[in-house]
Image (cartoon, rainbow, N blue to C red; front, top):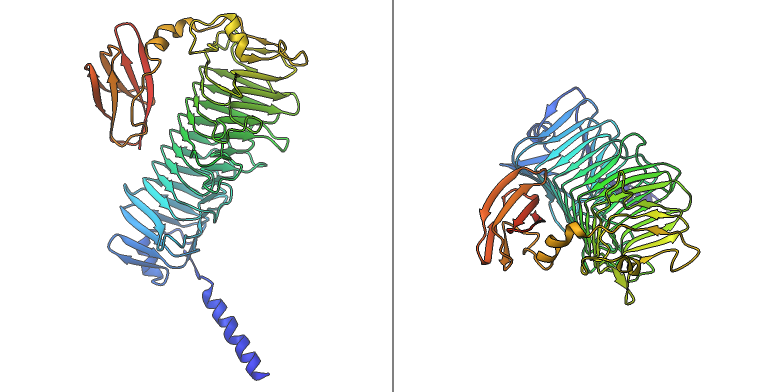
Amino acid sequence: MKKTVLLLTLLLSSLTALVAQTYTTPNTGVVWTLDDIAAASPSTVTVSGSDYQLLENLEIAENDTVQLDSDLTLSIDADLLITVFGTFEVTGSDVTITAIDTNLPYEGFRFEEFSSINIENSLIEYGGGLRVLTEDFRIDNCTLTNNVEGATTGGVISLSRGVPQITNNTITFNLLPAISSGANTEVSAYIFNNYIEGNNQENSNRPQINMGTTRVNDSLKIIQNTIIGDPALDQVGGIAVSNFVGGNIRAIIDDNIITENRYGMTILGNNSFAYIRGNVIEDNNTQNEPNLGGSGISLNSGAPGMEVIASGNEFRRNLWGITVIGEASINLGDGVDNPGENVFAENGNGGETYALYNNTANTLTALNNCWDETNIPNTLADAEAVIFHMVDDASLGEVLFDPIGCDELGVETQTFAHFNVYPNPTQNMVQFDNTLGIETVTVYSIVGQRLLEVPATEGSNMLNMPNTAGVYLVRFETAEASHTLKVVVQ
């Protein structure tokens, strides 16, 4: 009996030793760096020059601040968690947060409800993601890559409330989706100018940006992002905004590039209002199952109360251009407040072309759109051939598509029909073949600031791009036409 008790005691002691200890800051209003934590608790943080190792769980107390305000590398031991009740600021110009052993990821970060978080200029990798329970959250000019499930299960950045700011980041090849929020939380995030590629490597049925309900008086904003899928992943969409719980959706989805996903974007549920403008939505067909996905935009509502206003979007080579299902509705141009100006080309499956499929009983207005970019000018018959509605099935609603709006696209579209630059994305430069008489090339920031203007020569041209990662607008001008492309610098 004594031997059994002794063995049990030794076993419990061994298990206790395996459980990581947690260091909590003193909660006295201190503003500390990692050096201060190392001085207060040498078993928690070790230091070698600008290299730091975290060897115990770290908890930042409610009244305390921890700052990473210099260039450094923080390597974290397996399964450890950083929990923040107070303030966490990363403001160095070059900060890396990684795992001590990249095969043994750390648990990640948990930012509690009333914490204050600002993370800039950081590489965050080989961890369990950022679980954001606070409204006061900002992450800017960071790279998040090769992260796994840990502190988060919904996305590498998992949001819970408020108006968090996610700007100018690169989010690539993580196990989970890039950005998510809960189905029953109200999140009106500002997601701006991020490069998002190949996330949800576990290939679950979730898009790279996967958002739930929003605040009623503050819109979710997904603006000027590049969202590129991994063609090997056949379950992963681009963007989804869903209302499954009787909440509301207020969304602005503008000027994004969405390509090579299972589908481009979807909005689900009633009590929904969204602007969808100026997006380029191409080649979203990785599953290649038209009954399961492949729409550039899919709208689906089981009850009335969805209003989507879409203008200036470009849809090419998706399995469907736009699908409207159930009680959903979309305004694609009304001749009054919405100019239309959506462009469609080569969206189809099964040998048929589908620019717009109205699978509802609702009448849809779709004035002043270009229904077949490859066949300009369009006739009404050309448009009818790629729109599925009451004419094809008497149980469906009508699509009103007269007048057509290809005329203003004619010169530019015909001149630049097969023009492109490569590589895109790029590290520092792009190349293009000038067989069109291009005279000048101008590079603009995403907000329209002119950064560079150079003359073009006949034949092959190399264009040096700005060094800062982000999305840029490049305008090519001939004597008769001009054309603007988005170029991504990584």
